[in-house]
Amino acid sequence: MKRIYFLFFIFLGVLAYGQKNQNAAKTPPLGWNSWTWFGKNGINERIVMEIIDSMSVNGLRDAGFNYIVIDGGWRDSKLGKNGELLVNQKTFPSGMKKLADYAHSKGFKLGLHTVPGTHDCGGDKVGGFNNEEVHVKQMVDWGVDFVKLDLCINKADTCTTCKKTINGWSECTIEEVYSKWSHLLYCSGRDILFSVSAYRFRSWNPALCNMSRTTLDMQCKSNVGTALFNNRVRKNKNYMSVLTAAILNNESADFAGNGYWNDPEIMVTGDQGLSDNEQISHIALWSIITAPMMLGNDPRHLLPVEKKMLLNREVISINQDPSEQGRLVVDKDEYQIWRKKLSDGNTAYLLLNISEHKRNVSLSFKDFNIAKKSRLRDVINKTDIKNLYDNYTVVLDPNECSFVVVMN
Image 1 (cartoon, rainbow, N blue to C red):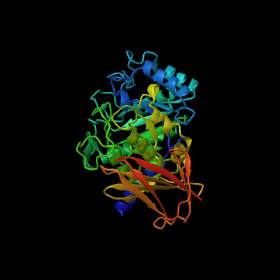
Image 2 (cartoon, one colour; image 1 turned 45 degrees about the vertical axis):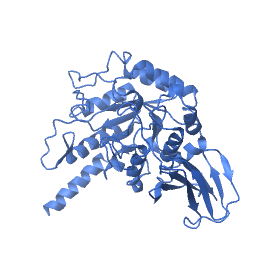
Image 3 (cartoon, one colour; image 1 turned 60 degrees about the vertical axis):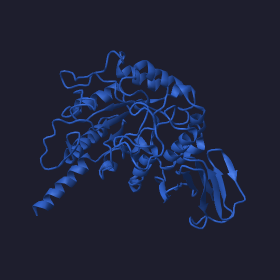
Image 4 (spheres, one colour; image 1 turned 30 degrees about the vertical axis):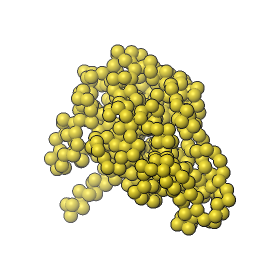
């Protein structure tokens, strides 16, 4: 009986704290995050403003990429005397309120990275543990539209009923703290998108936030130095390839939708080591798996291949279709097929060569119950593919893809 009462009170707690702004992310958020390209030490106010200016004229804003998220590097190395967050005066001298106002004036929304423990991941004592109300009020006063809460270090977790899991945290305290943030943001009086960054999916994520990390960090310019598209056998235990992140993200596909989206990590396009084919495949993957597309490039200097994909409304519309999270439906040693059923009754397919050699990849009409003589649309090249009979076969280079929609 005591066990029943305990579970009942836990349920009441979930009802009390399990709230989120359903309207903040009816579709996967699109935007830009500073971390992948600039890291903690390379970002400053001038760069952020230049990126806002660039995205307002290079087409990204009009394509829907409207969140500007400043990750690590904006804070001071300590909290104020009342536990409040302090802005780094050397790199962000105007403060967050003026920067948010500037972003809003250009048609963007501003996001900030912060941490719920006692220290950030670099060891600075700037965490929100026991200061949650103070920090949320600051976010509201500054006009912040997006909060990324990153599970860095907690040296004050005294929970003894749950096993410690990562960075000093116990699982019980993780859920308790993220629930508290969710509740405070929901009741703040401001529409703030809540992004949970706790390195894997947890069953309570969809009730508490709008998007949550399902993976560790990917290799990128700011950590290993180069991005990696395909490495199914992980050689670096701390950082993943693009494909590894997508496969891990696939495990929680059933939970996506209704204002919640699984987040396989910041994207790694731009001049970070991926070939043109790999960048196309990366963007196509994030599109078909309905992932938040948070760009980790330098939007002041878009590569032609980035423009081709990120400004392609057919590609982005598949990502923004909230019908479901696209899934991995064929997983072979040398190729994969991903599928997403769209709201209009059409179906998107991504054919991906993951071998080290050029090869044929085929979409069998019989295997996927596709009507013979169906019409396919190549959304990357914006061309119709006609006169097919019982399959669609394409020759792909290593890590190259074909992204098609089977039309009704």
